[in-house]
Amino acid sequence: MEKNYKQTLIACYLSFITQAICANFAPLLFLKFHTDYSVSLGRIALIPTAFFFTQLLIDVFCARFVDSIGYRRSVIVSEIACGFGLIGLAILPELFPDPFMGIILCVIIYAVGSGLIEVLASPIVEACPFDHKDAVMSLLHSFYCWGSVGVILLSTLFFATVGIEHWKILACIWALIPLFNIYNFAVCPIEHLTEDGKGMSIRSLFRVPLFWLAILLMVCAGASELSMAQWASAYAEAALNLPKTIGDLAGPCMFAVTMGISRVIYGKYGAKMNLIHFMIGSGILCFCCYLLASLSSNPFIGLIGCIFCGFSVGIMWPGTISITSPRLPEGGTAMFALLAMAGDLGGGFGPSLVGSVTQQAGDNLQSGMLVGAVFPLLLVVALFLLSRNAQDSRK
Image (cartoon, rainbow, N blue to C red; front, top):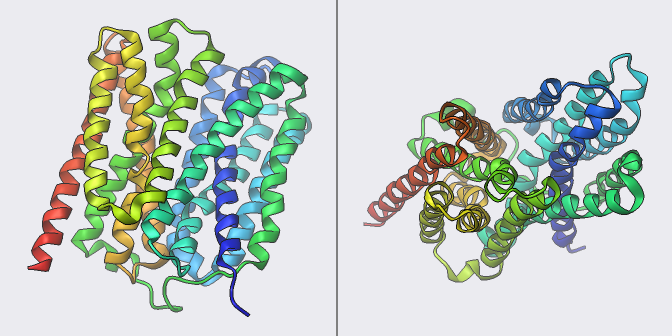
């Protein structure tokens, strides 16, 4: 029987939506946790830290052990962890003497699933016999954007109509997506990038100069994306004096929309484009968007810079994967895991740098945004080096 790889693609689409749910749902409830469970805002700030730190640990784990465990088992575990972590969020805080410990435990559980998705979905799709895989990869990653938009909009609608006091019901509803996706991954065809034991080791990857260039690209991609995404809501509130709900919609939600549009455009027309040139153009646009957000005296122009920054960063993460994979065909799961780890490192370091500079500048967020412009600039330089290397190799 002919294998149905479209089912594999649908399963991976849903896994990226699941990842978006895990990353975006709990932050919408931070103030609810604060009031209902009497958790200090300082402790609540540890929730995203625990989430991203767990993902980093999973990236390292996957680089060493996923090939021996197998893609199918690992990705099914990812969906189980996400589903039960979200359900647990509605149950466990009430069972612990300290509700915060129940919240953190659930966040760690679904962060394990999210980290596995981050590492496994891309190589699973890369191993499928699709034409124009760079375009397919871009479209795949767009589902994280649409998932983020859906979580923000639908959760906001639920809270406005049903009431935020019923958030536990919504947590269980969101959990249905990964639990349903267990079946998809159990029956869909899954191939491997390399034969058993034939993938490059971590030590071998670190000996390849191209891999270090890819690591730099991923760090810059993660930092360029999240430095703006995580501060977009605060920028909208501070610069335009918007209420938080409107600020979330005008800032991070519109950022995710334009990022998704960018990935869909490349997914549809990528076969006719040069990926490196498209990424260089995106990096230059990203640099300009950071300058608009940081230097413009008109807050609405600054907000436009924030929003269109989403479009500019859309191709960076999936594009780096698509550039690296065919150049290191024996890279295997270790390569994808380490690239994901580099992206997460950039995603953690970038927003922290922006926040630190903002504080040192007397809470001037525009000064922090100006420092964030260094990441797309470094990405463009790295892409020029990669382009020159590709031209030299053809001579």
